[in-house]
Amino acid sequence: MNLPVESYFILSTLLFFVGVYGFVARKNLISILMSIELILNAVNINFVAANRFLFPEQLEGYIYTIFVIAVAAAETAVAISIIINVYRQYKNVDAKSINELKY
Image 1: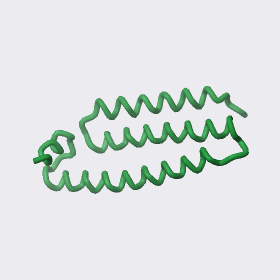
Image 2: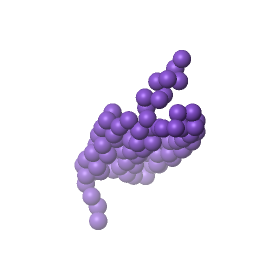
Image 3: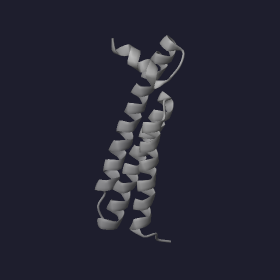
């Protein structure tokens, strides 16, 4: 069953805006990190859908997706370590506690 390319782009757009809303509206650092991951997954869907429908014999979209997944994994590892350090120091993971780390 082949779905039209528009359905993939609509799914990606919805996923992207859910991620943006979560990033803007949430105060918890873990929720913000999950929202960033949703945004990156929306980008991955765009890469794969565009590659499949525009250039099905080439693999550039899939290769970009693998790079985005690798960068997202590294970003998640660094962010989780920062969140753990914030939790150890302030005993909560709200974004307001990060503001105190500036000075």
